[in-house]
Image (cartoon, rainbow, N blue to C red; front, side):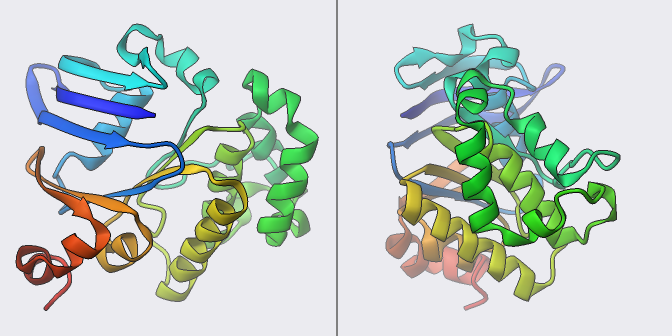
Length: 235
């Protein structure tokens, strides 16, 4: 579904990503882990079109994504749940979800999607008329995830969904993501610093350090790797 080959990108003339290659198959859950400053969020921004490429390629569903304007990429089926949630604080929960349903498929499936989002995340149904800015951090993260789902995506990219959340709330968010995946078969691409949780649920993982993929493999392979165990799992 998503193929990235020898990709270089950054800001101004400074490269942050160096020859990054990764593959995401339809229906897979792929985790990208690594320390702060490794380039994980930059990679997501490049896929969404916020960061311009320097070289390399990105293909999505066989299409050259770098030839698609950023404003059109969501219409291909890519939903980006950004770092820090970035909900529309002055809009209600329902209005935030509606903002995610601007794609053709999202408008077509709006009623069905809303019912499913409320079934997965019932707190959003309870808070549907409440301003998003008055919600807790965990509830705002659920709004951000629901907004992404409202677009009827083929690929849901989640950037640090546990950031700023209490461990119990972060665990709840991960559990909900797994429930959504089981129910839909949705392809998930996750960037996460909670490496143990990210690898626990993933089919495959990539370790990104200083803008380069330094390790890749199945979740079991990475969890057993001494470098990952020492650097990220505290073992």
